[in-house]
Image (cartoon, rainbow, N blue to C red):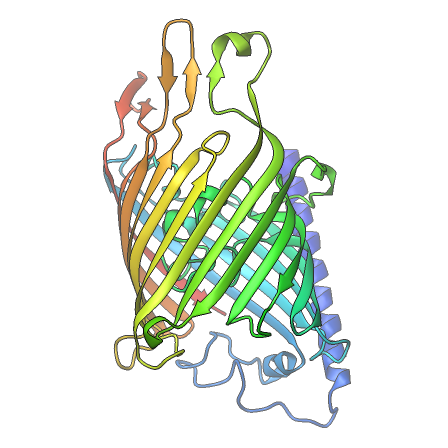
Length: 456
């Protein structure tokens, strides 16, 4: 275990050093490609009054804005969560943890190299603990602590990817891809991301029907099509990714032709009732051979594990403003929803539904505040272990609701109180707190939490 931890640590450190040297090199290139006598602009992406600018550390004396003008951006944020199980679940307890994310982007055209190229490198780490394993929920209540790995206290590089557009309508992307971020993978206006700005529960941030076959961080390549040139209007992508991808490995040693996932997704902007909305549909198929959810003791005792070849899922989501302060402003109130379906074995999810209300910047003078109320239902296949006397089942269907309000104290400091009431997917657990193992059922669980996000 120590050897594995050390190798991951060394890999992360080497990646950070590489990233730092690359930033220095590109910064020098940006300086030399511009007017050597030009002065940093006083206003820009990162400039402004301390309490009103977009980031805590500002424009670094104009240098950060100058880099951005040349196509180089370096963005860092830290999200901390204090969350507690206050009713039901496996244990009443409060846990503190957090996640840091450093993202480095390069636009080759702005840098003076060639048009249409975009490089992204992301370094991500989490620390502390979460209540995810105390609720009995199959779908984590703290999405933020899931990345880059569920285990916590790790530092990895989940994204090293390059995108190249050959014309305004089409491009390709390849590399180590982070399939869940702020602008890709089951995107939704009111319910999306890594749990750092909208909902905390993973079921309200992305569709769990696709999680088994589309890893968070994996090797992949794909084609991107922009039917109208504008990515805000419509996007279509077709990708092939490694089914076994992990944030803490390069992935090449695990890359096999029979362990790939094929993904297709399209998203279009709508104008129903003269208000902004989006419709998204996608599908996934993996040709990997998985362990079956149902196992027979006699087969296991004869050194065999029942297998299932291939897994599929389809998913859909929508968001629709019902009121906008100004069309296209990103401020107003609307509804959102998701639907997913999968094979049920080996994928434990058969059907998934979510529905909710979200809002942004409704209160005058508080343009950056957000809020949401949402509910979900997951129809989960109950794995079965068949023994000589009886068949044992472990899981049940799960559902829950969540409400949050994200208070933008400043543009770079966001505080979010949150409440969740869930019916966990686990039926029971073994309680050893009294010294003697006792099997206990898991009741409806109430989770309270508060989140603080800082953008540097």
